[in-house]
Image 1 (cartoon, rainbow, N blue to C red):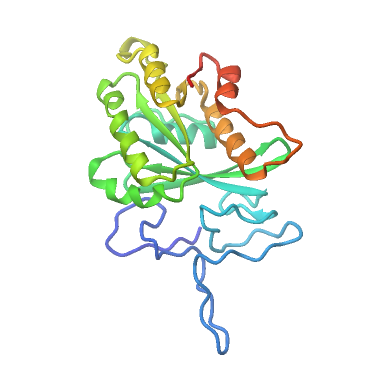
Image 2: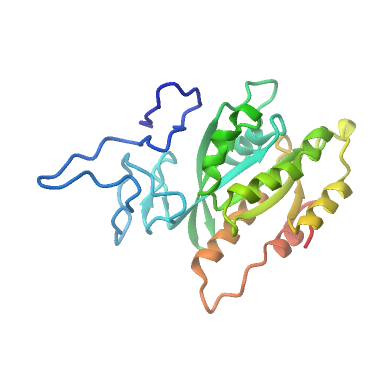
Length: 271
């Protein structure tokens, strides 16, 4: 991937500055000016071969047939931006790697610095849905960086660690931050991660259910190590966003809470 970097920023594989661009600069035409970076790309009638170029703005689902950058030339119909948020060490990166690559990051590793992201295209009810998943740093010193990404997010997965009481207690602070910076119609889901660590568990399942019910959030317990409910969490988000974007009159309304409750293994859903 040809990704430009902003001087002075330390981060992993993705620009932290709004002015950063992906791909080559667009040359000026005679008598004209360089098109704005936020301009939507022209619609196409069919699939095109994959080539490097700027992503469509995250808050605008791109046109049908766009190639998915960084995913082997896969094509998609719509794309959505999903963010993983929560305290440092709750397992956001592990959850993302498990979903994207089907692998588990064993052992210790360096915490995410700033922002990182990966793409994955899902087949949702016959439609290709691309999720651009942003993995955020949970440390307080990077909080101002992540704030800028909230406004373009279509969905947020809010994680806590069932073996870390402090990460659960901080969920309310994260919800306050989300309410302040994210869009009002953002899709939000609460996840209690690391349930495979049964001996170290300090946050009961009932506590997560109670908190989710208080805020009207769908809730699941997950494990990046075993893969419990990981695919389900992202698939449920993709289905909700896809149905919101299509709104076909003949199609029955998708209910995220009901889907999570019906499909989850040991999952819970609160209204």
